[in-house]
Length: 389
Image 1 (spheres, rainbow, N blue to C red):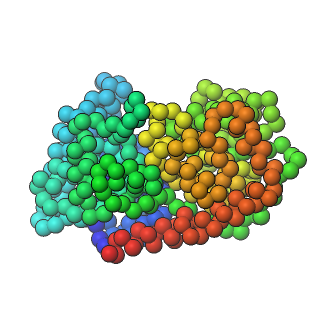
Image 2: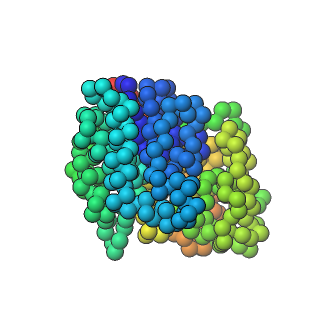
Image 3: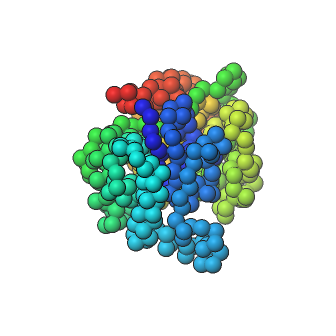
């Protein structure tokens, strides 16, 4: 199936989990998309892969421009760009550009991956001018908030988002938790599709470390979604001989991640990641315990999870029990999981790395999971089964 355009705030980048997910799961089907249209500052800060640059159309809000940011400051510019009035105004502008780009086309076909309100409203405005059939893939729901024990959307967006989901030709979601929630909230059916990875070629067989000091690697962002769980692990390691090595693109580690047991290794090029993972006794998957990030923890499955399962080294996942990734890994018995940020619980989980029988069982389950569900081939087949029907 050919798409006239891809619409999102998120670029098809090599430097972001969502971009990697699109490239791995869709594969050569990305060549069937005529244009990649980005309606947010995201694609300016994290550009699309070079292979898609000629087909990319960046349409960020004027409030997100470097010129306006220089005058008003980044924080104020961002705040203004996220108001309902400015989102609608920008959507009308972007829809006009897209309409003129495809002038004369009777019907348009799109793949939409909304990260927020910009893409949803742009499609909403575009449909006022011309018919658009679309598949939507919700990788992150940044619109919803967990407030006082319940889920809430901003009033201006929920009716439009509901319309977006209900009128899609098909809806992909990132987790079963998101699938169940959208079924309950909006009455829509969906297919779970998340970031894949492949088993590393010719890696040495993992050897359980019985006596030597343990070394744990973390590979990924050090942002809000990971930070508090990372800090909890760092605190639990104080005074022990276990070392945590952090590979990330940040300039420096934030407060709370300094200490003799934590070592910052900087950025690593993508093709070296899996080989480097195999130098460690385990890899760490941190998931925030904070209510303000519950929309990410409860509903999201990071591309990193599949990469960890594929690397041939045991995964230690730390996050709340309601986390989609904790639930998934517990169900499939594919990782050491700890659903607490308390020091004793974390150190007890780490000590399980010495249990040879349990670790080898987890690694076997992880490998089987890659072959039947999490690998690129099974994920691509799931994508094709919908597209071809």
